[in-house]
Image 1 (spheres, one colour):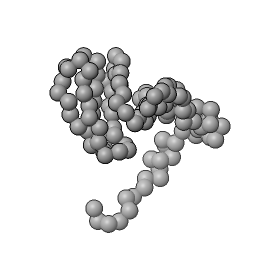
Image 2 (cartoon, rainbow, N blue to C red):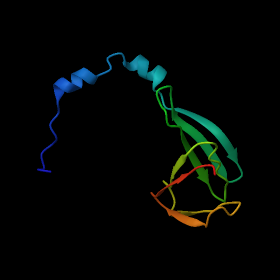
Image 3 (cartoon, rainbow, N blue to C red):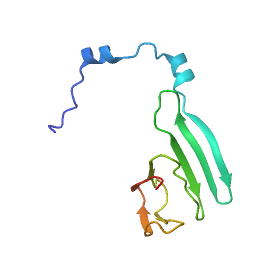
Length: 111
C-alpha cells in the first residue's frame, strides 16, 4: 500500500523449501501432462495440469458450434477464456438459458 515492494522473509522461506524438488523430481512428478479427451465435429477437449500432487482436474474445451458438457458426479467450475460470450442451456429444460461472458465463471453439478 505504500508503494514499496513487500518484504521477503528469508528465514521462513528456508523452512518451507522442499529441497527434494530438484530438476529430476520436477520433470518426473510435476510435468504438465496434456491428454486428448475428445475430438469431434466442431469441438476439441483436453485434460491438462495433472500430476499426482494435483487434486483439481483441468479440462480445456474448444468449440465452434453447440456442444454438450457433462459434469459427471462432481462439481465443475467453468470459465470462458476465449470469445465474447456463450449461451448455456439445459437440454432437458431444468433451468432457464443464460449468457456467460468472457472471463466469467459458472459452477455446475449433476442434479
